[in-house]
Image 1 (cartoon, rainbow, N blue to C red):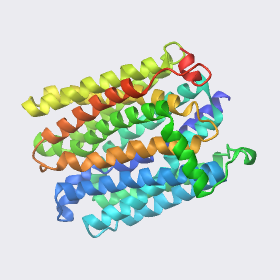
Image 2: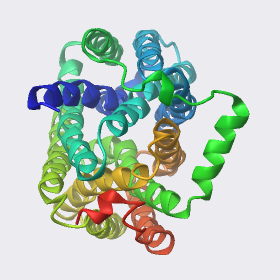
Image 3: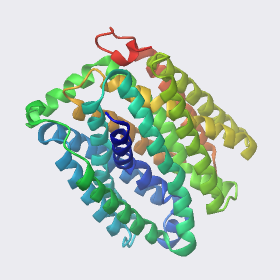
Image 4: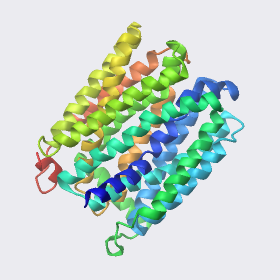
Length: 403
């Protein structure tokens, strides 16, 4: 693929796969304001975060198999339309529970971009090129977590939290236009699979029985969930426990996100020279070190000088974990890339969604639950990786062979 085409695809697919951080990160600085405006507690407002991640997970479960049956383009466009309309509806939510319900729909629509973007990459690339392109997506996708909370914080200077959701609607409309004009169909009709429910269940069943696939997917999902605990709890921990302003919180959040981008690009340089499984192991180890350090810092009350570096390490490690785990998990499933991508995404967002209320379970004035959840998840990711994954034969894992 020509460099200009690669750049175009990376921008579009990176934007589509960024619906997750777009949906969550941009409104994080507004969580305390939402709680005050809607007369809700921290856990009630965080319910909207769990609802969004549940929608992101369930939407991938539906849209992934549909893209294997009907092609990538049509389900993708439908999903983006749903995302844009639901974002606009969120701006009109009268209560925390209404907001949570609408966020569920918003996540469901945004899931199409996430799951189908990964499937499109699998349609176009294999082997080392697959891992390299996922690293390129980390550059585009990683810019969104940097800019989203900063943009959200700045929007709060001139509008309310409702204006944040209007902005999300506008972003969805822009990505819809880009997909209509520049994203072709990548799955030929002859390569599409039957779309019956029994066939879909059989496909998911075969994926679940693939121990190595589950090992890569689950270890990455647990590491992702550790980062998600940070996403869910950091706005309250940093703003209410440590008294940072929404703008300073956005700056801290952006710096951590730059860590993801940087490590993603380091990974792109190393793929092909260093075994992908080894890079994944390094990323998971760094995630565990960061997560445990966050736990120690919060339990002992060591303050921002100890907490911020630990958060940075935990978040930056995802730049190594995500591209390698995704490439290794999908490399043996070319014919079912949509379904495999869906299961990968379901695990990520379901685990993340389940843990998000836990970080606020003791209220908004303590940081200990966030630290304990992050430490437990990051250690669990390492344990799953060690127990469930092992090197496949070269024929089954061209990405691993490339090292």
